[in-house]
Image (cartoon, rainbow, N blue to C red; front, top):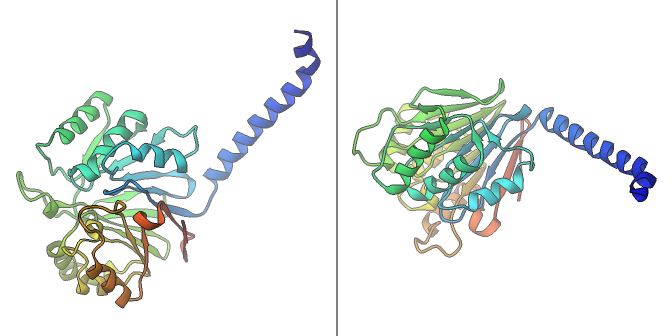
Length: 285
Protein backbone atom coordinates (compact mmCIF):
# COMPACT_ATOMS: atom_id res chain seq x y z
CA UNK A 1 0.00 0.00 0.00
CA UNK A 2 2.84 2.37 0.84
CA UNK A 3 4.41 1.69 -2.56
CA UNK A 4 1.10 2.43 -4.25
CA UNK A 5 0.84 5.79 -2.47
CA UNK A 6 4.43 6.56 -3.33
CA UNK A 7 3.92 6.00 -7.03
CA UNK A 8 0.27 7.05 -7.21
CA UNK A 9 1.07 10.24 -9.08
CA UNK A 10 2.95 8.33 -11.78
CA UNK A 11 0.22 5.70 -12.11
CA UNK A 12 -2.31 8.49 -12.48
CA UNK A 13 -0.26 10.28 -15.14
CA UNK A 14 0.20 7.06 -17.13
CA UNK A 15 -3.54 6.41 -16.89
CA UNK A 16 -4.37 9.93 -18.14
CA UNK A 17 -1.85 9.59 -20.97
CA UNK A 18 -3.39 6.28 -22.03
CA UNK A 19 -6.88 7.78 -22.05
CA UNK A 20 -5.65 10.74 -24.11
CA UNK A 21 -3.96 8.41 -26.59
CA UNK A 22 -7.11 6.38 -27.22
CA UNK A 23 -9.29 9.50 -27.48
CA UNK A 24 -7.00 11.15 -30.02
CA UNK A 25 -6.53 7.87 -31.90
CA UNK A 26 -10.30 7.55 -32.22
CA UNK A 27 -10.62 11.20 -33.32
CA UNK A 28 -7.88 10.66 -35.90
CA UNK A 29 -9.63 7.60 -37.34
CA UNK A 30 -12.94 9.41 -37.55
CA UNK A 31 -11.46 12.50 -39.25
CA UNK A 32 -9.54 10.77 -42.04
CA UNK A 33 -10.26 11.74 -45.64
CA UNK A 34 -9.14 8.49 -47.23
CA UNK A 35 -11.22 5.49 -48.21
CA UNK A 36 -9.58 2.12 -47.57
CA UNK A 37 -10.32 -1.21 -49.24
CA UNK A 38 -8.68 -4.43 -48.07
CA UNK A 39 -8.57 -7.70 -49.97
CA UNK A 40 -8.23 -9.99 -46.97
CA UNK A 41 -6.06 -13.09 -46.98
CA UNK A 42 -8.72 -15.70 -46.22
CA UNK A 43 -7.31 -18.57 -48.28
CA UNK A 44 -9.37 -20.09 -51.10
CA UNK A 45 -12.32 -17.74 -50.86
CA UNK A 46 -13.21 -14.05 -50.83
CA UNK A 47 -13.19 -11.40 -48.12
CA UNK A 48 -13.21 -7.65 -48.81
CA UNK A 49 -13.38 -4.96 -46.12
CA UNK A 50 -14.32 -1.38 -46.97
CA UNK A 51 -13.86 1.54 -44.59
CA UNK A 52 -15.06 4.94 -45.73
CA UNK A 53 -13.75 8.26 -44.44
CA UNK A 54 -15.32 9.03 -41.06
CA UNK A 55 -15.92 5.40 -40.33
CA UNK A 56 -18.59 3.52 -42.34
CA UNK A 57 -17.64 -0.15 -42.77
CA UNK A 58 -18.87 -2.96 -45.04
CA UNK A 59 -17.54 -6.51 -45.21
CA UNK A 60 -18.15 -8.28 -48.53
CA UNK A 61 -17.98 -12.08 -48.07
CA UNK A 62 -16.05 -13.83 -45.31
CA UNK A 63 -13.98 -16.62 -46.80
CA UNK A 64 -14.26 -20.34 -45.96
CA UNK A 65 -13.48 -20.40 -42.22
CA UNK A 66 -12.51 -18.50 -39.05
CA UNK A 67 -9.43 -16.93 -40.62
CA UNK A 68 -11.55 -13.87 -41.37
CA UNK A 69 -11.57 -13.07 -37.64
CA UNK A 70 -7.79 -12.95 -37.56
CA UNK A 71 -7.75 -10.72 -40.62
CA UNK A 72 -10.30 -8.30 -39.18
CA UNK A 73 -8.38 -8.25 -35.89
CA UNK A 74 -5.29 -7.13 -37.80
CA UNK A 75 -6.96 -4.16 -39.50
CA UNK A 76 -9.60 -3.00 -37.00
CA UNK A 77 -8.68 -1.39 -33.66
CA UNK A 78 -9.18 -3.74 -30.71
CA UNK A 79 -12.02 -1.63 -29.33
CA UNK A 80 -14.02 -1.68 -32.57
CA UNK A 81 -16.42 -4.63 -32.41
CA UNK A 82 -19.07 -3.24 -34.72
CA UNK A 83 -19.48 -3.54 -38.50
CA UNK A 84 -22.18 -1.53 -40.23
CA UNK A 85 -23.06 -4.23 -42.77
CA UNK A 86 -21.95 -7.57 -44.14
CA UNK A 87 -22.75 -8.38 -47.75
CA UNK A 88 -22.96 -11.95 -49.04
CA UNK A 89 -22.40 -12.13 -52.80
CA UNK A 90 -23.70 -15.73 -53.02
CA UNK A 91 -24.18 -18.66 -50.63
CA UNK A 92 -21.18 -20.82 -51.51
CA UNK A 93 -19.16 -21.88 -48.49
CA UNK A 94 -15.89 -20.22 -49.57
CA UNK A 95 -17.69 -16.87 -49.36
CA UNK A 96 -20.22 -17.65 -46.63
CA UNK A 97 -18.65 -19.62 -43.77
CA UNK A 98 -16.49 -16.83 -42.41
CA UNK A 99 -19.47 -14.46 -42.29
CA UNK A 100 -21.16 -16.78 -39.80
CA UNK A 101 -18.17 -16.33 -37.49
CA UNK A 102 -18.29 -12.56 -37.97
CA UNK A 103 -21.99 -12.45 -37.07
CA UNK A 104 -21.20 -14.32 -33.86
CA UNK A 105 -18.20 -12.21 -32.80
CA UNK A 106 -19.14 -8.70 -33.97
CA UNK A 107 -22.14 -6.45 -33.61
CA UNK A 108 -23.37 -6.34 -37.20
CA UNK A 109 -25.99 -3.70 -37.92
CA UNK A 110 -27.30 -5.14 -41.21
CA UNK A 111 -27.00 -8.17 -43.49
CA UNK A 112 -27.20 -7.60 -47.23
CA UNK A 113 -27.78 -10.39 -49.76
CA UNK A 114 -29.56 -11.13 -53.01
CA UNK A 115 -32.15 -13.53 -51.59
CA UNK A 116 -30.45 -16.32 -53.52
CA UNK A 117 -30.78 -19.10 -50.95
CA UNK A 118 -29.08 -22.46 -50.59
CA UNK A 119 -29.93 -25.76 -48.92
CA UNK A 120 -26.41 -26.27 -47.60
CA UNK A 121 -25.88 -26.49 -43.83
CA UNK A 122 -23.75 -23.33 -43.76
CA UNK A 123 -26.51 -21.18 -45.23
CA UNK A 124 -29.03 -22.56 -42.73
CA UNK A 125 -26.64 -21.67 -39.88
CA UNK A 126 -26.18 -18.22 -41.45
CA UNK A 127 -29.95 -17.64 -41.44
CA UNK A 128 -30.34 -18.98 -37.90
CA UNK A 129 -27.57 -16.72 -36.61
CA UNK A 130 -29.21 -13.69 -38.21
CA UNK A 131 -32.47 -14.57 -36.45
CA UNK A 132 -30.81 -15.26 -33.09
CA UNK A 133 -28.94 -11.96 -33.21
CA UNK A 134 -32.05 -10.13 -34.48
CA UNK A 135 -30.02 -8.48 -37.25
CA UNK A 136 -31.94 -6.51 -39.90
CA UNK A 137 -31.74 -8.29 -43.25
CA UNK A 138 -32.08 -6.66 -46.66
CA UNK A 139 -32.35 -8.24 -50.10
CA UNK A 140 -30.56 -6.09 -52.65
CA UNK A 141 -30.90 -5.94 -56.42
CA UNK A 142 -29.73 -3.95 -59.43
CA UNK A 143 -30.33 -0.25 -58.74
CA UNK A 144 -29.81 -0.44 -54.97
CA UNK A 145 -27.42 2.24 -53.73
CA UNK A 146 -25.73 1.98 -50.35
CA UNK A 147 -24.33 5.22 -48.93
CA UNK A 148 -21.37 4.19 -46.79
CA UNK A 149 -20.97 7.90 -46.13
CA UNK A 150 -21.87 11.03 -48.07
CA UNK A 151 -18.98 10.57 -50.52
CA UNK A 152 -18.64 6.77 -50.78
CA UNK A 153 -21.46 4.92 -52.54
CA UNK A 154 -21.80 1.21 -53.29
CA UNK A 155 -23.90 0.76 -56.42
CA UNK A 156 -25.43 -2.70 -56.89
CA UNK A 157 -25.21 -3.78 -60.55
CA UNK A 158 -26.47 -7.38 -60.18
CA UNK A 159 -28.58 -9.42 -59.73
CA UNK A 160 -31.52 -8.15 -61.73
CA UNK A 161 -33.73 -10.73 -59.99
CA UNK A 162 -33.41 -14.09 -58.26
CA UNK A 163 -35.04 -17.40 -59.12
CA UNK A 164 -35.77 -20.09 -56.57
CA UNK A 165 -33.46 -23.07 -57.17
CA UNK A 166 -31.71 -21.12 -59.92
CA UNK A 167 -27.98 -21.31 -60.62
CA UNK A 168 -26.17 -19.63 -57.73
CA UNK A 169 -23.46 -18.00 -59.86
CA UNK A 170 -26.11 -16.52 -62.16
CA UNK A 171 -27.63 -14.62 -59.22
CA UNK A 172 -24.39 -13.09 -57.99
CA UNK A 173 -24.25 -9.74 -56.18
CA UNK A 174 -21.93 -7.50 -58.21
CA UNK A 175 -21.21 -4.02 -56.87
CA UNK A 176 -19.30 -0.91 -57.89
CA UNK A 177 -17.86 1.38 -55.22
CA UNK A 178 -17.42 5.04 -56.10
CA UNK A 179 -15.40 7.52 -54.06
CA UNK A 180 -14.72 10.83 -55.79
CA UNK A 181 -13.07 10.11 -59.13
CA UNK A 182 -12.05 6.56 -58.15
CA UNK A 183 -14.01 3.33 -58.65
CA UNK A 184 -13.74 -0.28 -57.47
CA UNK A 185 -15.64 -3.16 -59.11
CA UNK A 186 -16.40 -6.20 -56.92
CA UNK A 187 -17.47 -9.25 -58.91
CA UNK A 188 -17.74 -12.17 -56.49
CA UNK A 189 -17.66 -15.33 -58.62
CA UNK A 190 -19.29 -13.67 -61.64
CA UNK A 191 -18.77 -15.62 -64.87
CA UNK A 192 -18.70 -14.63 -68.52
CA UNK A 193 -22.45 -14.76 -69.15
CA UNK A 194 -23.07 -12.06 -66.53
CA UNK A 195 -20.02 -10.12 -67.73
CA UNK A 196 -21.60 -10.09 -71.20
CA UNK A 197 -24.86 -8.82 -69.74
CA UNK A 198 -23.08 -5.94 -67.98
CA UNK A 199 -21.20 -5.05 -71.16
CA UNK A 200 -24.48 -4.89 -73.06
CA UNK A 201 -26.30 -2.84 -70.42
CA UNK A 202 -23.67 -0.72 -68.67
CA UNK A 203 -20.61 -0.29 -70.88
CA UNK A 204 -19.18 3.15 -70.03
CA UNK A 205 -20.27 2.80 -66.41
CA UNK A 206 -18.09 -0.29 -65.98
CA UNK A 207 -14.84 1.70 -66.09
CA UNK A 208 -13.04 1.14 -62.77
CA UNK A 209 -9.60 1.76 -61.35
CA UNK A 210 -9.65 -1.51 -59.39
CA UNK A 211 -11.21 -4.81 -60.48
CA UNK A 212 -11.69 -7.74 -58.13
CA UNK A 213 -11.17 -10.60 -60.57
CA UNK A 214 -14.13 -12.97 -60.75
CA UNK A 215 -14.07 -16.53 -59.43
CA UNK A 216 -10.51 -16.41 -58.05
CA UNK A 217 -8.96 -16.10 -61.49
CA UNK A 218 -10.81 -19.00 -63.09
CA UNK A 219 -10.94 -19.15 -66.90
CA UNK A 220 -14.76 -18.98 -66.63
CA UNK A 221 -14.47 -15.28 -65.80
CA UNK A 222 -12.69 -12.08 -66.93
CA UNK A 223 -13.38 -12.20 -70.65
CA UNK A 224 -11.31 -10.00 -72.91
CA UNK A 225 -14.30 -7.84 -73.85
CA UNK A 226 -15.31 -7.31 -70.23
CA UNK A 227 -11.75 -6.45 -69.25
CA UNK A 228 -11.61 -3.96 -72.11
CA UNK A 229 -14.70 -2.11 -70.88
CA UNK A 230 -13.58 -2.05 -67.24
CA UNK A 231 -9.97 -1.20 -68.20
CA UNK A 232 -8.62 -1.31 -64.65
CA UNK A 233 -5.25 -0.14 -63.41
CA UNK A 234 -5.21 -2.80 -60.70
CA UNK A 235 -6.51 -6.37 -60.49
CA UNK A 236 -7.10 -8.09 -57.16
CA UNK A 237 -7.15 -11.90 -57.06
CA UNK A 238 -8.16 -13.82 -53.95
CA UNK A 239 -6.91 -17.42 -53.96
CA UNK A 240 -5.39 -19.89 -51.53
CA UNK A 241 -1.74 -20.89 -51.75
CA UNK A 242 -1.22 -23.99 -53.90
CA UNK A 243 -4.97 -24.48 -54.23
CA UNK A 244 -6.20 -27.59 -56.03
CA UNK A 245 -8.17 -25.58 -58.62
CA UNK A 246 -5.12 -24.02 -60.23
CA UNK A 247 -6.41 -20.49 -59.47
CA UNK A 248 -5.51 -18.06 -60.85
CA UNK A 249 -5.13 -19.64 -64.25
CA UNK A 250 -2.26 -18.78 -66.57
CA UNK A 251 -4.80 -17.75 -69.20
CA UNK A 252 -6.25 -15.02 -67.00
CA UNK A 253 -2.85 -13.82 -65.81
CA UNK A 254 -1.68 -13.52 -69.42
CA UNK A 255 -4.84 -11.61 -70.34
CA UNK A 256 -4.30 -9.15 -67.50
CA UNK A 257 -0.67 -8.72 -68.57
CA UNK A 258 -1.78 -7.96 -72.13
CA UNK A 259 -3.85 -5.06 -70.75
CA UNK A 260 -0.89 -3.89 -68.63
CA UNK A 261 -2.90 -4.34 -65.43
CA UNK A 262 -0.98 -4.50 -62.15
CA UNK A 263 -1.84 -7.80 -60.44
CA UNK A 264 -2.02 -8.34 -56.70
CA UNK A 265 -2.75 -11.83 -55.34
CA UNK A 266 -3.49 -12.93 -51.80
CA UNK A 267 -1.75 -16.28 -52.37
CA UNK A 268 1.51 -14.43 -53.13
CA UNK A 269 1.09 -11.01 -51.51
CA UNK A 270 -1.09 -11.77 -48.49
CA UNK A 271 -3.48 -9.07 -47.33
CA UNK A 272 -3.69 -6.12 -49.75
CA UNK A 273 -4.78 -2.59 -48.87
CA UNK A 274 -5.77 0.09 -51.37
CA UNK A 275 -6.29 3.70 -50.31
CA UNK A 276 -8.15 6.37 -52.24
CA UNK A 277 -8.22 10.11 -51.58
CA UNK A 278 -10.94 10.51 -54.20
CA UNK A 279 -8.43 11.49 -56.88
CA UNK A 280 -5.80 8.75 -56.90
CA UNK A 281 -5.31 5.24 -55.51
CA UNK A 282 -2.34 3.76 -53.68
CA UNK A 283 -1.60 0.10 -52.91
CA UNK A 284 -0.16 -1.12 -49.62
CA UNK A 285 0.75 -4.76 -49.03
